[in-house]
Image (cartoon, rainbow, N blue to C red):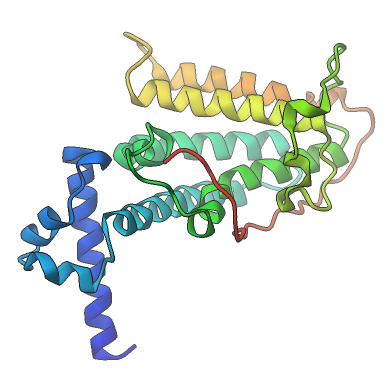
Length: 254
């Protein structure tokens, strides 16, 4: 990298650093390129040499947040043996909570209220935005191969309940059916809701939020994993997990 490229990278890093500070102070809706430029000692027009618009800056912050969360989850997940499905689930969930508590404003940006007059460009955000879900999908696939999926619910599940999700590239080559996917979505919703409720102080006076989270984590795990002792037959799991980004779509959230 040449001197000019290094200088540009350093300035862009400073812009992101100050923007994250402003995000914490003013929220995503109050993010202003003019204010960021002023704090960095730039003329207002100067910042446009590095950031095209407020929406461009928001997109960079969103991608950074998703990527940071995914890296934390992947690091915790990779430390657990592939055959330990329960441990892998716990590692992802705990990493998500720890990251959220350490980065509350980044979490709010990607999982909080949508930013007014902003639409996330799917070609840039869908890959980072679904990386953690991708880990959980592959965990579902490994659970299916190991005979660890819970028995189907007696009332079944209409195919329309999950729409065309199973045709997405994320599920290509995986043994995940509509009911397993629905269970996974329920588990993800419970996990995300548990973190959101704690972070935004929606639970009231809880003496031990960590213990409550562990209870939620276990209940969510019960939705997607049969207890190991109850599996129909022993099986060695070879995880198919490969954490890559996908080219298009819409992750929702921000």
